Length: 179
Image (cartoon, rainbow, N blue to C red; front, side):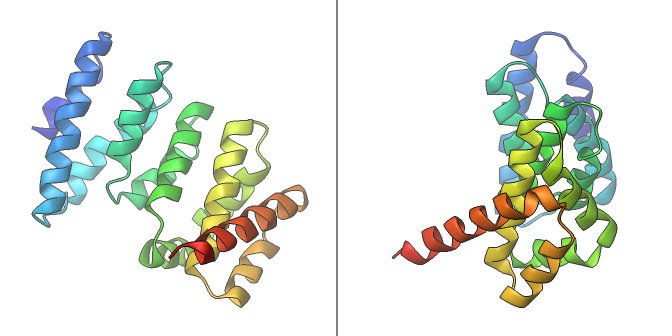
C-alpha cells in the first residue's frame, strides 16, 4: 500500500496528491494508534519522496505533507535538511521541531553531524529555513538541562546566537505560563 501511495506522488494532478495524502495520513494515524511502527524499509521508501515533494507550491498540500512527516521519522527527516529545495528543507525542519520530545532530542544530540547541520541552518540565507531552524534549536531548550543547552548554543553561528536565545527565552516563558 505504501509503495503504491508513494508512486502516486509522481502524478501531476494535485487532486490525486491531496487524496493520496489524506489516505496516507489516515493510515499512519491508525498504525500509530495500534502502536505499529513503520519498518525501516517502508520508511526508506516513503519519507525521501515525501520530503522531496514537501516544497510544493500549494500550501494545503505542503501542510498535509508536514503532517505526514510528523509521524516520528527523525532519521529520514534529517536527510531532508540537505535538499536542494529550500521549501523542502524548511518543511523538514518544521517537522523536526514539531516532533521534538526528550527522546528525539537526545537522539539528535548523539549525532554531532546532524546537530551540526541543524545549527548551521540557523544562519541560512533563506528566511523560512532560518526561522524554522532557530525555532527548532530553541525548542531543544525545553528538553535539555540548561548547561547542556548552553553547550549546544556554543556551536551556533555568531549571527544566530541572539535569535536562538530570544526564542528559547520566550518558549520558556510560554511553557512556564501554562497551567
